[in-house]
Length: 133
Picture 1 (cartoon, rainbow, N blue to C red):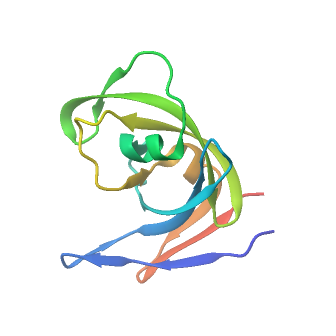
Picture 2 (cartoon, one colour):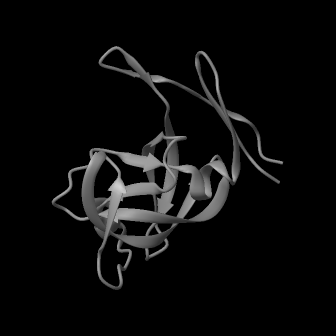
């Protein structure tokens, strides 16, 4: 069993945010250290287009439209499978990849692939995460 990991909240503009460190694997097998905002209200994880491009992950098919991200605005993007490592547990996570015209300043980590693969507890001072067996 993997150890429980504690991430203190990051204070940004006076607000505590649940930001965690994780790794993403590129097409060449290289892993890069990233940070993402845990969002228990997001069904899917969302990655900026530039990050997926940097990882060398191929996007196939036509972009699709989604709503519910950034309020009622309709956004366009692709879906891609990304190998992630969150607290030492590798998971393949299907992520939404926003087109470059939609600005996203950070990775959003949603329920599919993150919350369903880990025990996550939001505490007063931060978040604890451990992998599910």
